Length: 48
Length: 155
Image (cartoon, rainbow over the protein chains, first blue to last red):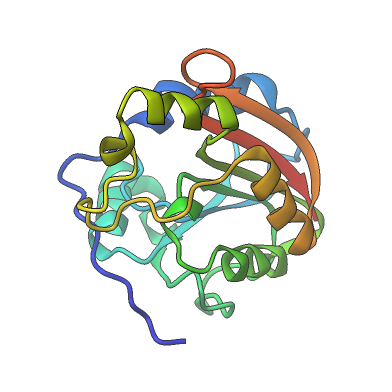
């Protein structure tokens, strides 16, 4: 597939992940994965 | 959280550079990659126990292709944590009543949101792409005008 991606502007990274999404993931979702589990962040750009 | 094998990709060079600078100890684990390409870079693991997709799918023209690829990258019974802005009936109604449509669905935001999911539509898409919905959590603001939804699904 042709890539129509346009470079995203990260000058002002969104902070919604920090503000309310990550805390929900940490508090509520318990998966009991082993410490050597392989984890992928699919679309991790601008991780803050 | 103590996990040792954490990887990440993004289509954005500048985004990957930000991630590498923020986490220099695992800088080699970040890759520039197009989410529509099912073949991951050869120098990263090809199968995962957990894939996290935070606030990505609403930017994609082809969300089904993205979720199909995620399904392919997961081990059997692997987990997906997916987050995207919440758009239920009551919130949509409020956006219209408060005349916030231009702000909320702003076509002038380059690279901005182009897909707007409700619990029903994201559940249907997950089901169509081989996932079982395990948990749904609304977050940010008060119930039913949530900013986002966090979804746990299993392959």
